[in-house]
Length: 118
Image 1 (tube, helix red, strand yellow):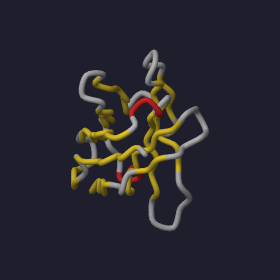
Image 2 (cartoon, rainbow, N blue to C red):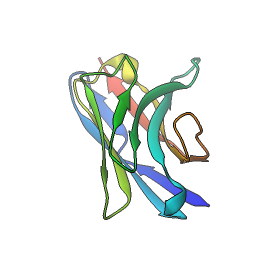
Image 3 (cartoon, one colour):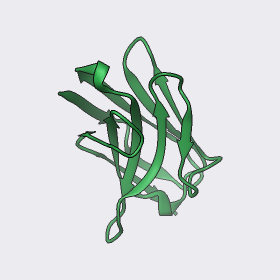
Image 4 (cartoon, rainbow, N blue to C red):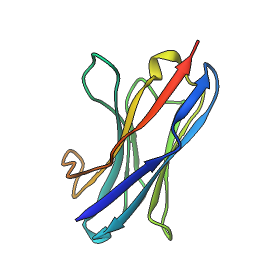
């Protein structure tokens, strides 16, 4: 199994920045891709960003392109989501996920709340 633990959420004003972290442990070799998703109240889960573990190729949802950056620390097995120019509509619970391929998200973290005030 793979364990994922998110941190870094909180309350920020519109236009501000936050950095989320996702620490992976356990059977790390099973991770091919790590990603971030979010779920706002009353809305469906939304893809935010993903990064391939092998070559650090990155993918972004349309709503965050140009504002969010996903990255990883190879040595520490930690993924990051740098969120800039935050908007109230970015308010959601953000979940870290990982799996053996893009589109197959097997492991999930517990989620961290991000609240952006206007």
